[in-house]
Length: 106
Image 1 (cartoon, rainbow, N blue to C red):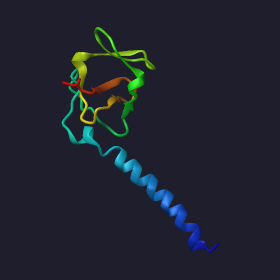
Image 2: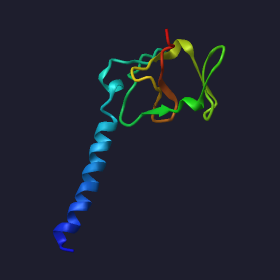
Image 3: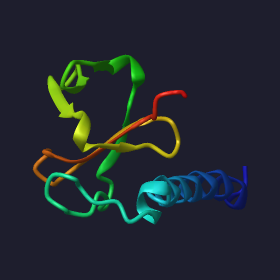
Image 4: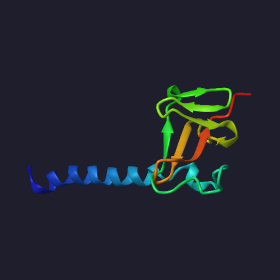
């Protein structure tokens, strides 16, 4: 194997990682003017939003429960999700900044 044939696979891996990390934060939350209903802070920052699997969510009388975190988000603080997924955006200390939930079917 020549040095150029060894470099090519490594370059592909590096470029794939760079592309995925760039595109991971280039999504609808970044492009909207979303702010926290609780305190008005912007919802997104570097790598602070993640999908919460629907299986980890439970509707309650007062809000959405993220079962794995034991956190209930009041319905009044849940914003509409543009992609039909649950999203939790956090601050540097891990506390919730914003939460997005799918809209009920009409």
